[in-house]
Length: 138
Image 1: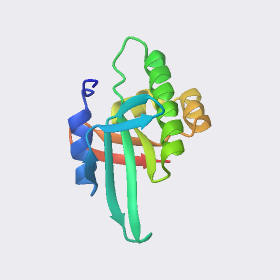
Image 2: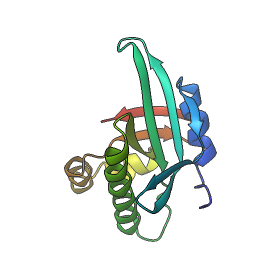
Image 3: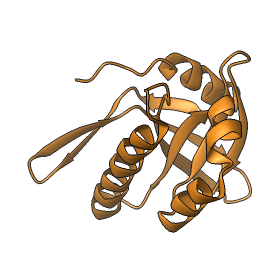
Image 4: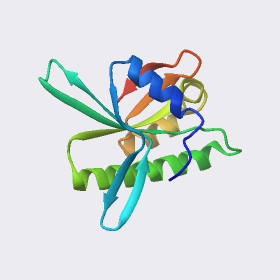
């Protein structure tokens, strides 16, 4: 099992503060001989929908020497998880968790926004100091 990312516990706390209940830490995804580990799964009752909302959150830390290389890895992992989750269940919505500074400094670039849009990546932006969710971006 992989080691948790630097911000794993921060995101877990932020999601909990936002009203979600952590159901898996990590979520083991099994499919046709593959075993993958998404960082977190959570759920909460959504009154307007009168049903449960379920999410899977993959935490990414963009601290390597090349932010583009980090993005390549994150997008690849996200696409793999999304593909497999769609094949085994429709109950989860997948999110990529990024910290607010990476969002402001890197994800603000038009080329990065285009990559996120074209790959239909849902983002959850968090503040690591306050351990709070800043924005859910679909």
